[in-house]
Image 1 (cartoon, rainbow, N blue to C red):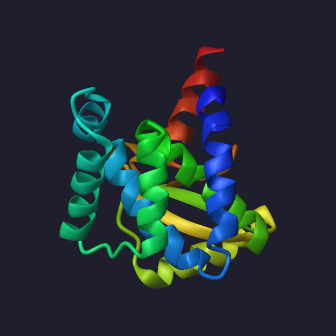
Image 2: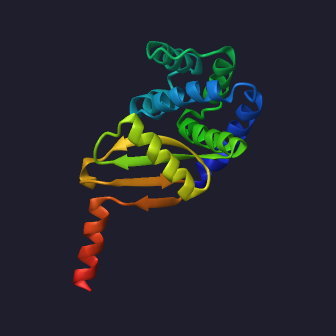
Length: 179
């Protein structure tokens, strides 16, 4: 994966500098483009040698528009540059590196909270306060449901993991009993 990161870094840095006046807006359309570009069908289409870069651009931009994602001129120019250089497959990594740069500037981090059950807004805000104290930074929480956790949560912030799930506790008990 280091190769993808090496390829993606200049694109992410250039986009970060170019959109410094509206990083939040750029992040919105970038996330949408990453989802579109990460689909297997889009990867196959963009990688087809008989498909031109103009055709690829039209398909991606029309899919974005069908999902109610407005692509400003800067987004269109960025997308054209990525497609013209044959880097559609790298777009998700570009977005990931863009988010790292954005978070570094704001002093925050992205966090994924895996939960066995849906969290209401009050529980999520309480959890955010607790996690920000635990990790000593502002967190941008994203919740994903994982029923196999049975109960509790698993939080991933960068390369740190906080696992308080029932599944993790059962695994710890299993290891202790086998030892």
